[in-house]
Length: 338
Image (cartoon, rainbow, N blue to C red; front, side, top):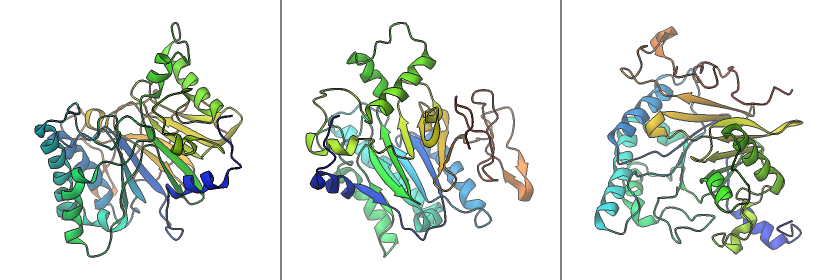
């Protein structure tokens, strides 16, 4: 085992980094996306459409508890030159303007959590866990939003991984190409494995080692925070965005549905894809934002002229509309357990 769990002081330290969501909140859906490139106008088009679907069907449909944005937040390679800084700051500034002008409802009621990716500017850039995005880059974003609301908003610039506890569900979110590192460090031998097998290897390695980044003796792991990376006991929802592994949603083990593990390799900007986790129903599903003119099919109109979120098929199953009851099939390779 990596770590002595009897050490109370370290245990306490881990808990300080967990985001605890108020108990009295009845809402239960978390919306998760990654590679949200704020330097691309197209991202704002997709985001606008997605947020509008939630706002326009409110109050018949409840809003999500929160939106979890995982990096990268810029499509450029990290660079110390002035252009990178300018573009980065501008992206977040543009996001604040859009939220204030069109989505006050979401700013009023929802958590917005930003988790840095591989390319985002953080202190000790390559460490794991990764520290939050440096304040310098988001100062303007925060100022804009704070100048609009007197009270503090639920906007959190979090570490990567980030832990959230809500409705007695423990969740961990990690934006990292873990599989790639597992192969490079020869922790696993993936010479002749097919892709699907790699997915199983990723799940079994993370779960088997009870560690979100199960690479032995990796010098990037900050010793002081290593307990933060342990998955012991197993959280209810492990949400990884690993571009080096295929997307899947499955149970962490064959014999219990206590823990769902999800990976998405589908960038929000490029694939318009996001994941919804319900902390109440303990279910995860993947959706695609419908943009007119993208597909041959126009948006399907539902009662009250609402557009549905319909899109490509994953694993041969149609994707249902998340706003009209989440009763769809789960995309997982394990069968249902009750």
